[in-house]
Structure formats: structure tokens, C-alpha cells
Image (cartoon, rainbow, N blue to C red):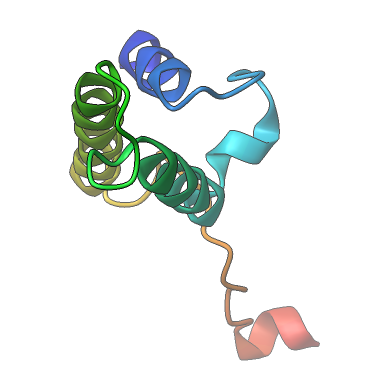
Length: 89
């Protein structure tokens, strides 16, 4: 699974897929939307933009699917975890 995650992040043009930053789902989502806007066929007339758009979309969708399959353990959440009463004390 880690190899597949690495390949998906590479498709999303991640500079250093081994860094901890990619583990934040919000960072992955933000990167996907940046690239989707850059390569969207309606916004980019390059001949390769359409294929690149499909590639990054498939990679992003696969990352989402793998995160769901692992019940949210693949990526860290940017949301703070609520402390229980025991942890507050």
C-alpha cells in the first residue's frame, strides 16, 4: 500500500513524498485542487493537459479510497482531537 501511496503522491507532483506534510489530508486536497485548476482542459489548451488532469484526478481519488479503506488511518486529520475528561486532568 505504501508504494501505491508514493506513486499517487508522485502523480500529484509532490516534491518529497516521504515528508510528514503529505500525511495531512487537507494538504493533499489542496495540492489536488491546485493541479486540477492548472491542468483542467477548459483552462489549459496544452495537448498533454487533459491526460495530466485525468492522472491527477485518478491519483487523488485512489488516495481518498485508500484512506476510507484504512478507516482514516492513512492520513492525519487537520482537525484537533477532542480530549477526554481523563486527558484534560
